[in-house]
Structure formats: structure tokens, C-alpha cells
Image 1: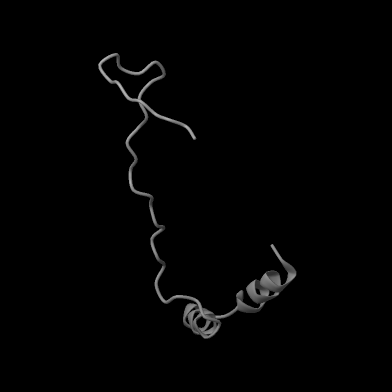
Image 2: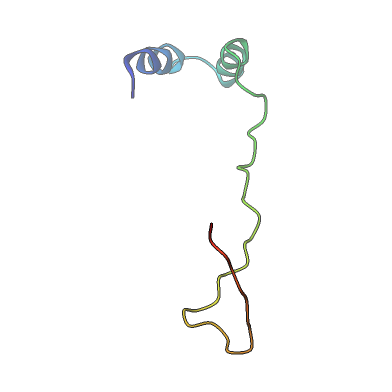
Length: 61
């Protein structure tokens, strides 16, 4: 924990929850916790060797 964050935590340790919320809101904290953004599920890649029924041609330039 950084020194600045430790000082903030120490200063808020003896205050009420309402006082802590007011201070954190004044510092720019969000009122409600946001849920983490989840990546969209991805389609898994086929296993090595692939399917014999698939034919593709690629020309690398």
C-alpha cells in the first residue's frame, strides 16, 4: 500500500461510515461499486490437426 493511501486509511479508520462515504465521494469515488466487465465468451479453437473435411487456401505475400 502506498504511503498516501495508508494515510487516508488511517485518517478514516476512526470515522463513521457516513463520514467515510462523504470523504471518498469528495475524492471522486463512485457511489456504488461497479461490477467488473467480463469479456464476451470466445469460441474455442479447434484441436491441432483440424478436420479433414475443411479445405482452405491461403496465399502469403
